[in-house]
Length: 173
Image 1: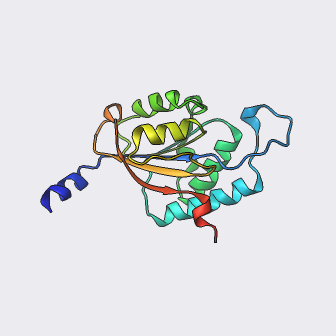
Image 2: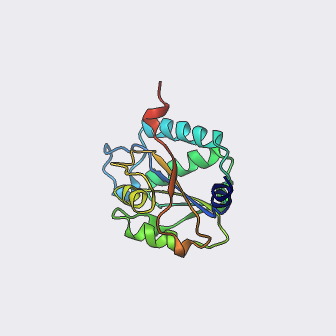
């Protein structure tokens, strides 16, 4: 079908959301300093390996400065062979409502085609449902949601197609 082929080739922007891994409440530290649990570390490896198997090429990666998000980010980026020196840490991703995340995404540099961001809930569930085509009750810890947009400018994105989700529970036998 010619029309379908044209639509497929017009795909211009891809947003990949990864919620931080399972974190620990066992330490008397500020929220931003909470570490990952062992499960969060293992799930990061699982999701990172699965994402690598999909052969997705990342142009840019951004993370919340929170320890749990940054640690998850580093695990996944290493699996993808993405240079950590290109990672950008941004406080706008330390957001729980989703409004700062939406604003951040719409202000991305248009030179980036595929962007991977690491952050938090409820923000990522809100963004996945606001921008994607699939209703998601809850993006679980270390959950990944990939949304493709036909727009060629980040500020123009409205509703995209939820291309795939990768949740740790799906990967465990």
